[in-house]
Image (cartoon, rainbow, N blue to C red; front, top):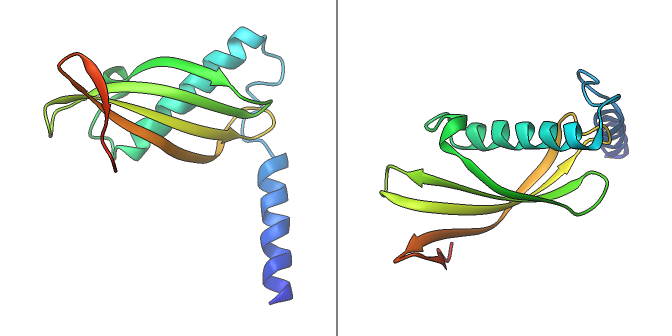
Length: 121
């Protein structure tokens, strides 16, 4: 059991400290936010199973909560239920902002008669 925990800890440390492409090392703050938006859109397309392309999503805002934590509001038209949907997600990135370590959906809303209403699930 100790070996399993040790292996898990070491793996998480390498994931958190490592970087895949080092794309963000010499970027300006504006370019870093563009990279964050790019990664968030990639994650949203991945979570949707590729049923919607990246251009179907509208990133309404991205709020920086910490050095590597962000909250994003993303809206899109869901053709399966024929509704406008807005998702609020929380993201934790690697220190160099190159990849997402963890993401969590905080809120899902639909547009009903011009107002955003919580979906309740």
